[in-house]
Image (tube, rainbow, N blue to C red; front, top):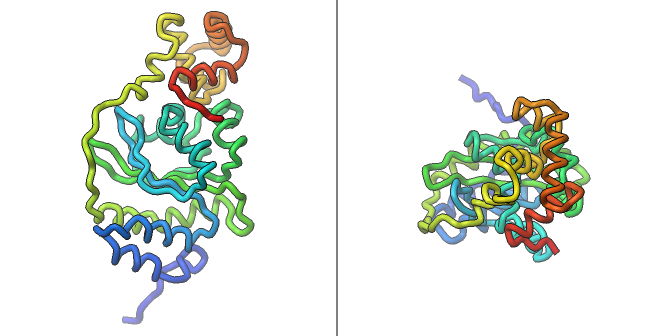
Length: 265
């Protein structure tokens, strides 16, 4: 029976050599460096972060190729508390579904007009982020973030998504075969930030609305999520701002970052 090549030439890697080097490095200290080199070879200019997500504490950063400035502006505040507002983290926390997801597929309505998007995407220049979630256990799950801080000339977000979905089973198999050495850690208070923010100042419903505002939900999306009218959301927002002594979503966002001890400067 003749061999039939089922690999799609438009999305398949030009060479399997980088993947072979990763495979050869499994369970060695060179596994993560080879994995980084493989992905950078397949996606020139890509910015990547591999982390382990946890239900009750901060993420662990296992691998990244960001500059020192990007680390200070991105990963440090993210791990300090901004991850609680991240739509990818919220998606994993509430659904824990493995696969490849783009920001637009999982972000709440109005997210691109939120302070989180302005601070974490627009201001830093992050383009076309997508996230790969891999099967985990009770301790947590691995997640791979891919994006560009310099918009690529020859790779659009649809192509990136298609190619990552093509490679996903291989990446999953490699990560599952590698023997990770996890260290047990105690629950950290940072994870309680959304539950404790403005506690004692706002009512339970106002805290609920506040959490959704911080996570990037528009007023209409909040109304739909809570099964209330947009007018009621508007009144809640007015009372929240009054009680906290602020007058904008930007100030609310900064108050939350202060609550978490996050410095974005």
